[in-house]
Length: 461
Ligand code: ARG
Image (cartoon, rainbow, N blue to C red; front, side, top):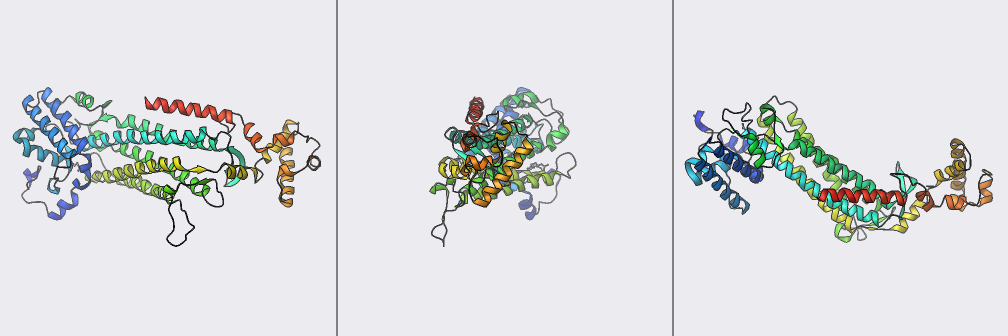
């Protein structure tokens, strides 16, 4: 088959090269973006009288038919036509004849592919933002139901101070909210329309770039033709947003994996989201959570691959950039799938409040509160820290908890101890007393939940 660019060639492309440089096997996924971009371009060409209005109408009608057939899976793409852009153009010309050959007036595949990628990223962002909102809803639901479910908080994976499950969930919520906002920020920079950049140096035709931007729902047009075709920051930003979000999902999965171990026993995974062992009959493994943790590396790989591919490229377009698409699609597919599965998995997890409470009561998580008690009675904090530490050491030796000591035993460490100490260092009091904005006290967490609710309502509008 003759090439759309075949004019200056005397010899056919080696069949090995056809196969090697063709991108249709993966970029056919951009057909929707590509055809809508072409419809807008042709409409503008007609209205600006750069081509005949009748030709423009024929092109638009032809493209609409191709779009319909593509959606129904009826199109046959060919590697001879190299990529989605030339496949669509070739099919168009086969269908409508001469007029089809006028579509590419004032345009290059370089600005065309930049446009398609931007359209894909913009829609990817809206899709992942919606998935993040669904997940945030589930997280909020768990938080609402567990304002008083005390659990141990950790540093260094050693029990530190008591918190509540609601507070822990709202920490997850914040991570997810940032992912959402980061995407919104990336969207603003992806929202510039590059057509009119041409191959690299714009075009001699008086294109109405603003009209094309408006037809395609872009906020504005790219400001420099060289940059318009060679910029892939918007893909990189999407992939870094994906990587950070996957890192969050991975940390959440790691917690669910830990919590579902026999040693923690804080959660039980739903049977639908766990798997068994082919040899050990008792096993129930958190495979789904592990796989999400594992796939995080894959999305980082997509980001690293693209950053590395871009790092040595001189302006403007270079064929290396064709490699952006598989990374983009893979990261998008992996991320959206992980978000969806994680949301359903979390929605079906059951929490064992008793085990969490038991966990919070062990490990001297109220030792800071014991020191704070003495501070309130007038002792300097450093001294109180020392007293509390000595009492913990005695308890470790006697294998008991601070609350197991009698008042008399406590008073041997400081005469400041009074009967009210038992109430003040009860685990629930430890949580309730941390009533500071951003803290774990039920009142403070309720405020965070209300703010979370408002955020999700805003997003839904
Ligand atoms: N398939 C190409 C890509 O994905 C389209 C642009 C080709 N441009 C060129 N000058 N070879 O990057």
